[in-house]
Image (cartoon, rainbow, N blue to C red; front, side, top):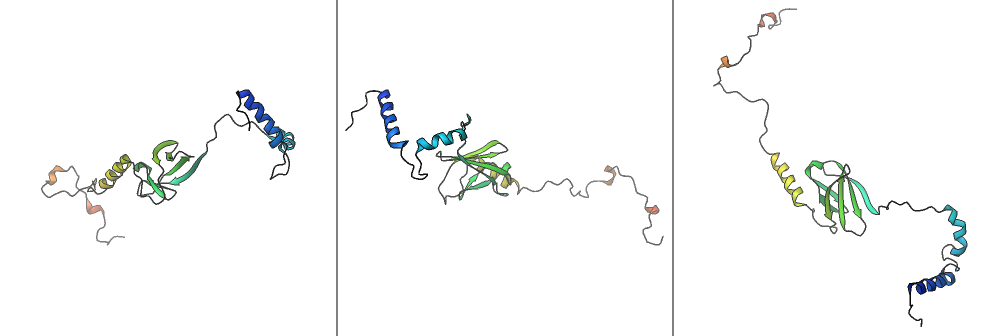
Amino acid sequence: MLDPPASVAEINARAEVFLDTRVHTRAHSTTGVAPAVRLPLEAPMMAVLPRIRFDAAYVEVRRVHPVLPLVEWRGVSYSVPPDALGQLVECRAPLGEGVLEIRLAGRRIAIHHVALLGAGPIWEPEHRRAAEQVALGRHEPARRHLRVVSDAVAPSEYAVEKIDLSRYDLDGAGS
């Protein structure tokens, strides 16, 4: 049985002995070559990792439904604002965080907790309220720019010149 290490330096010394005897000198099970032999050959081909953090999230482009402000992600529908209807959006799910972030033109428009497969549509209350207002607003009577004028309006109220129809061949007799 090993004695517990007295310091971090002792732990590092023990680890170095372990690596030299048990890891670096043994042939790797896949390559059949010991890491101590391969490292000098592969080191010139290795590069330094970029200083920018690598984004390890699932990212996919989806289209918002043309009628309902919902985006489907892994079998579940998630709400977005109604002004995103029919638009292409970016869905981003960071690993291990359990959230879905939805972006439109680089701007985050929604963030949801990821639901289990088979869950009904996941609505953010504000998105649902806005969608209902839009849906109910479509059923209002149409406001047309033309309307029927009743007979109660006197023709003298209109400033329209009388048209001289004598210059037109209305009976089709002329050539």
